[in-house]
Image (cartoon, rainbow, N blue to C red; front, side):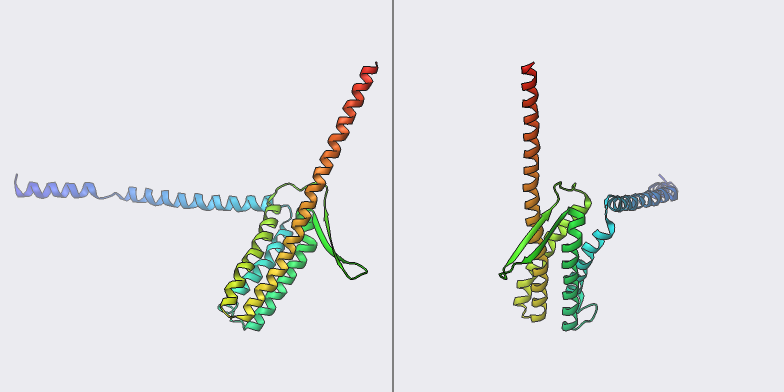
Length: 225
C-alpha cells in the first residue's frame, strides 16, 4: 500500500468518526425538550397545588408568620445585619401574630377546630375545645395546617439546646418563647382533634342505633300482618 493510500485511509476514518452538525443540533434540541418538559411538569404541579387549595389566603398567612420568624432567626444577624435586640423583637412579634392567627382563624376555617381558655370565678383556668360534628376532608389545606403545626414547635425545640450550649441568651429566649407559642397551638388542636373523633364515634353510634331500631320496628310490623 502506498503512502498516499495510507493518508487517504486515515483521512476517511477521521471524517467518519466526527459527529455531523445535524447530530449536534438534534442533541441540543432533545436536551432543550427535556428541560422544557421538566419546567412544564413543575409548573403543572404548582398549579395543581394552587387549584386544590380551597382557602389560599388563609393557607398563605398560616405559613407566612412561621416562615418569617424562622428566617429572621437564622439570617437576621448575617443577611439583614440586625442587632440581637432588634432580631428578638421581630421574632417575638411574628411568633405572636402566628399564634393569634392560627388559634383564631386558621384552625376554624381549615380544619373546623377551635379552642380557648376560660377563667373561672375561683381563678382557675379551664380549657374549652370545640369541633365540628363532621370531619373535613383531607385536602391540601388540612395537610399544610397539620404539617406546619407539628413542624414548627419541633424546629424550636431542637434549637433550644443548641442555643443554650452556645451561651447566646437572646437566641435562647427567642427559641423558648416561639416554642411556647407553637406548642400551645399544637396541644390545643390536638385536644380538639381528639374531641372531634369522640363526637364522630358517638354520632356514628347514634345513627347505627337508630337504623337498627327502624329495622326492628319494620320487622315487627311485618310479623304482625
